[in-house]
Structure formats: C-alpha cells, structure tokens
Amino acid sequence: MTRNATILRPMNVAGMMSGTSADGIDVAIVRIAPGAKGLRMKLLAHHAVPFSTSVRAAVLAAMDAGNISTAELARLNWRLGIAYADAIKATLAEYPVKLQLIGCHGQTIYHQGVPAKYAGVKLACTWQIGEMAMLAAASGVPVVSNFRPADMVAGGQGAPLVSLLDFVMFRHAGRGRVLQNLGGIGNLTAMPAGASLNDLIAFDTGPANMLIDAVTQSLFGKPFDRRGAIAARGMVLEAVVVSALKHPFFGRKPPKSAGREEFGSSFAAQFLKQCKAASRRPEDAVATATALTARSIGLAYCRFVQDRMEGAVDYLLSGGGAHNATLVEMLSSELDPLGCKLGTTEDAGLPAQTKEAAAFGLLAYETWHRRPGNVPAATGAVRSAILGEITYA
Ligand SMILES: Nc1ncnc2c1ncn2[C@@H]1O[C@H](COP(=O)(O)OP(=O)(O)OP(=O)(O)O)[C@@H](O)[C@H]1O
Ligand SMILES: CC(=O)N[C@H]1[C@@H]2OC[C@@H](O2)[C@@H](O)[C@@H]1O[C@H](C)C(=O)O
Image (tube, rainbow, N blue to C red):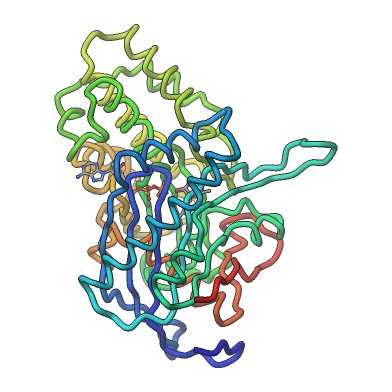
C-alpha cells in the first residue's frame, strides 16, 4: 500500500486503545472511505483483550510511580508490544478482515499537558509506550502511533484526541450532541447543532472509573464495581463529595486534560481516608466515588458547555462506565434537569466500548494521508497538526 497525500482511498483500519483504566486492549476494525459530506466510517469488528494480571500490575505500577527503573520501563515497553501483537492476532483470528493499516494509541504512562519548569526550561510532556515494531511484524501492515506529541508541539494539551471521531460520526444538523466517554478518566466533546470543527468544546472532565476502581479494589478486592451493584447498596457521603470537588482541576477552564497524575493513588488514598472518617460502611465509599464522577460531569456541563448549546441535546455515553447502572442513574439525575437526553453511542451507531479504539483507526487514516488529526478547539493547539509516527511492517 503506497501513501498518497491527495487521494483518499477506502481502507480497513484497526484502531487499538489501552487506556488509563489499564484493564486491557480494545481493538476496533473500521472501514473508512471518503464520501460526499466528508469521511464515512463503518465498524467491521470489535474485540476486547484483557491484560493479564501481571501486565496490569506492571502498567499500574509504572503509571503511579514516583520511582521506576529504566530497565523496568524498557521491559514494559517490549512486553506491551507483545500484548498489542497478541491482541491483533486474536482479533484477526476471530474476524478475518484484510487489514491495511493500524492506529495504536499505546499505553500512557505519564502525561503532563500543561508546561512546567524542568532543567531550565518550561515544558509539557506525554509518553505512550509499547514497542510498535512487534505490532507491525505481527500484523504485516504499517502502524501509526505516538499521536499526542505533535499536538503538544503545536501548543495543545495532547488530549482529548477523540474529538475528530466524535465530529465525523456524531455531529447532527438539528440537535446538540455531547459525547461523554467514561473510561478511567472522563472526557466530553460538545457539538452545538450544525457545529463546524471550530465550534467544538472538548476537555477531560476528571475521574470517571479511576476512583471507583481504586476504592472498589481497596475495600472489596475487586477490580471494578460490576454494573454499579456495590454503589447501589451504599449511601453517598455528601461532605466527602463536596470536599473532593474542591480539587483545582474541576474549576479550571478548558482546554484541560487529566490522568493518574491528578486522580491516581494519592487522590484515592485521601478520598478513602475521608470516607472512612465519615462512615464505617465500605459500600458508602463506592457510592460516594460514583457520585463524585456524576457530580463532576454535571458541574462541567453547567460551567463550560450549557451556554453554548441550544435546544434539545443528546448526551451520549461511551466507555466501560456506560455499563455501570448506578453511575448512569446518577448522571441522569444531574443531566436530565439541564435538558440533556441521556443515551449511549450505540443508539447512534457505535457500541460504547469501541469508540476510543475506532478513533485511533480514524487518526491513523488521517496521518497516512498526511492530513491533520488534532482538533485545536479541543486540545488548545494553535494550529492543526499531522499526528504520530509510522512503523512499517
Ligand atoms: N460491566 C461493567 N460494570 C461497571 N463498570 C464497568 C463494566 N465494564 C467496564 N467497567 C468500567 O470501565 C473501565 C474500563 O473502561 P474503558 O476501557 O472505557 O477505559 P480506558 O479506555 O482504560 O480509559 P480511558 O478512556 O480513560 O483511557 C473499567 O475499569 C471499569 O471501571
Ligand atoms: C494522556 C492520555 O492518555 N489521555 C487519555 C485519558 O483517557 C481519557 C482521557 O484521559 C483522554 O484525554 C485521553 O484519551 C482519549 C482517547 C483522547 O485523547 O481523546
């Protein structure tokens, strides 16, 4: 397959995402083709491959690490390369699609979207790891990866990048739409009815499942609160929610991005301490973490989005948190009174668990055609940029 800067060709592209929850790798194979009104995308296959316990532990340790050896990072980089290679092989064994390209996000182990002083200069930085030579060799097709730095060099926060897919797949001429992903971190893309790419509002909303997972693991020894069953039995500790919402991230104006750096182990430890001081029932802590996610999203919508939307608004959820019934119910209590009709991306054609992976398929397609993939209105970049680098098979 040769690369062509001007002629867009239909392609089968696999997007691969392993996110801040560190639960595993989502693979979405999409058919992307030019159409009269822009690109058209169709989901051909989706496969989720969980990380093994040891890989998950290594990823979490690297993400929350104050201290990690270079040797450990190098090994993890290669181990993740093997995990991505295994994930694409498993997907293609189940869905034998003729692939032409892969877009692999890699695993974020550090993200600092805002410049800070380091070694005599101010810089922002981000790092997604996973040895892509493994993935290219295993799949036999070129792999686009390392999407975030080019946006940051253009003055953006390097995130969120999913906004382009939100625009391509979900914009609506007559209805406002908010796309809310509920991964480890939550993010939203808001599009007023008939919006152009420059009219988007997009930013990270704070923790989605990250805190719920940490609290559930610590108090119940389970990696997540399946369907929100534990939270449903608990009572929300209002004072703890109010205190947690004082974290400066929530009040900061977009563009903004977050990660375990803000809402990882030390935030969870402090939150748990407050919950334990307020109640002896562990399910109350899970309910309170779930309420914090819902409340922070409601507040973000009020503060940064509502003014820009007119008329009916579809609020479409995606990501693993869309399966948490208690979280969805709490979100509904926050958002219904603000005129938002809650649904999932599935209602508009893309299953909740596939959206982020599909986004990296689209971004790879754009890079392959030497077209920009960032949305400056979302990341805060001063210009658009072609994202990523290519590893050939
Ligand atoms: N059935 C379920 N019930 C409740 N929660 C669930 C369920 N399935 C998944 N989740 C939650 O979704 C999380 C994974 O979501 P997802 O894969 O969308 O996140 P991610 O891609 O790792 O994160 P990010 O989008 O921040 O990069 C799990 O850690 C869990 O908390
Ligand atoms: C640095 C990084 O990996 N950020 C992720 C993370 O997970 C969710 C949220 O924080 C989002 O900003 C981003 O991922 C999605 C795919 C994005 O860039 O749109």
